Each structure stands twice: as C-alpha cells, then as structure tokens.
Length: 425
Image (cartoon, rainbow, N blue to C red; front, top):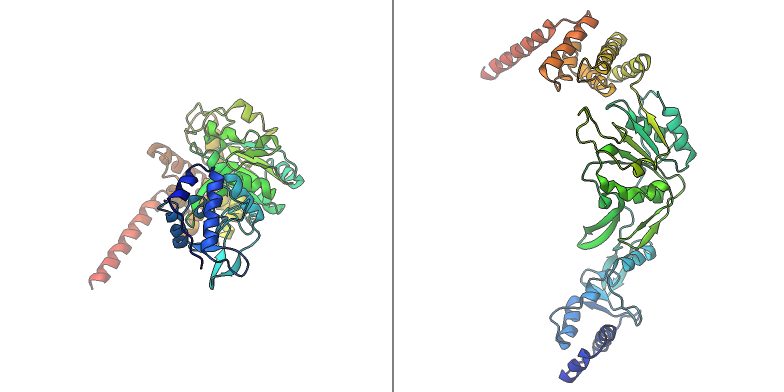
C-alpha cells in the first residue's frame, strides 16, 4: 500500500481548481495510496475513502462517489470511476445504468463475495398479468364490440359508462381473458396524480430509484390499460392527454420518451359521462375536461342485462355455489327488474344491481334462507326502502314468508342459549 499525504500548499491549490479537476485529484490520490486489484480496478471501503478525504480537509467520503449507484459494487465497497467517467448522480445517469443493466451477477472483490444489483427499477410487474376467465361470466350488451377492439391490438381508447354494478369492468376483464391480452387495472380516485400513473422515485434497499407507474408499464408491455371509475378523477388526470393520442409520452423526471408498444390501448369506465352527477346518486364524481373526453373516439352505454340474460347469470352463480335453484334466480331477477323500472320512473331512490343479485346468491349459499339472503343484502339501504324491497319480494316469491326471518332469529337465540347451558354444565 502506498502512502501519500497532501500538505497545506496542496490544499490551497485545490481551492483554485475546477470541480472536475478536484474530483480527478481526489481519484489520483486514492490510486496513489491504495493498490488496484487483479483486474486493475481500485475498490475502496468507506473508511479508505474517508482517510483520503481527510487529507483534503474533508470530514466525509465524497458524495459524488458513495451516492452514485454506478460506483457501488458491494456493501460498503466502491469502485473508483476511471478518467473521463466522473459524473454527478442524476436521473439521466440512472437511466443509463438501467439500460446497461442485464442481470444480477456475483463478483469476488478483495476476497469478499457480493451481489451486484441494479440501482434503477424499470419494472415492478413480474409474471402473467392476463386476467383469468370467470366460469360464471355471461356476455351481453356491447361485449362483442369491446372484445373486437381489444383483439385488434389497435390503439383505440374506449369510454364505457353505466350505472353501478352492471358489469362494465367485468366485461373488459373477460374480453382480455378470452383474447389472452395482458391488462393493468388502475382504480382512479380524486387523489390520483401523475406520480401514481406515470411513476416516480421510490426508496428501495436504501437507495432512491425510479419505479414505473401502471401507465408506463402498460405502454411498454403493449397491454390494455383499464382506468376504472375515471369520473372520480381531478384535473391531475390531464397528464394522460398525450397518451390518449397514442403517440407516446415524454417523462420529464427521467428525461425519457416512452413510445407505446403494439397492442397498447386505454379503456375507461365511469358511472357518468364525465359531466358529474346532478342527482347526487354518485357523490364524488367530477366534471371531466372536455378536451380529455374528446380523446375517446367511442363511448359505450352499458345497460343492465335483460331479464333472460340476468336470470342465466344468477342461475350459474347459484349452481357454482352448490345451491342450484332456477326458480329463486327467476324470482330475484323479476324483483330487481320491477325495482329498476320504479327507479327510472322516480318512484324509489335506490336500485338493485346485477352485482347485488350475485351478493344475494352467495348469501343464500351460506344461510340457506332465501328471505334472509335478501334481507342481509338490502340492509345497506334506509329502513323504509329496505322494508319496501323485502315486502315486494314476498309478493313475487310465494314460497317465502316474512315470519321466516323471525323464526330464524328465534332458532339462533335458542341455539345460543343451549350452547351457553352446555358451557355451564
């Protein structure tokens, strides 16, 4: 090991040097004091860097070495940059490091085996992101049109609007599953911003790294990007403007232009048409920018399925839950259909969605009591609405009796008392 120290004269000379010259002088001092390894590289510990730094009147190791992930080769080990490679840690350098990164490999440095890892995270998604097929799914409405667009792999943004629980999201998901297309779903809220969508810097393993957002992931993979509940967004969603034109986007934080791969497209779902909810039915929905909405070439208006289709959906669900009962499925759908018509005429403020009918079918498989399944799944409504809904169902299904609920509660009370007595005994 060589030993080189700088005197006061050298320190004064350092003050007149440029930043790059100072950095090169520091590297020269390190090379003069410490031997290189068998590969000709100078690998120094943090203590060795501090030792040389003290000769320059510095308390700590230079940040431009220890904070640059390109120089880090192991825990507490840093490789000195060669002449002409002295750079600052910035986004462009991190991008370059990511592009040069191939795969983790093990290197032996000063008899210490360490794993060299990438400091720049390009993708956080691994494995298969093609949705699974739902055995209970029954297609209806504009499903075939949506599936045709997804199958074409053309960039053609779709806006799907409709009341809650009528299968908007499920239809897109199943179209991707059927056509074996990758899909990335993003649930939009009023807090969703550019960082959530495009990506941002994250802390990982003690390092600040860039992590792609779901939009960039979908673009680079050529996947279908599903923006769910888009009408809940604020004006921060406007960062998607260039993406909805299909020409790619410049991510200024990493100084990189992302061009969409073949197959990338955008599907947005909403309860409104982006004009807000005047009746207060969908609180939190916002009026979307007209220029943003204009980027969607077509809009599908999703309705609830017909009585025939919906009966098939509920029958399949009951069969899957091992409580096959076509009569119950028919009664539930007829009940929901009457409520929806009354809702449309302004007679009631609540509606029974297809999703809620599925909830009732699952509740029936648990409680094995038709009326109780209806009751527990309508308890979310106010008392007057709930009572009227249950009363309507008893008129449609002559096989149930309101007293069944009371007797069921009594049975449960008796069972609890018996269990309590057994505990005492």
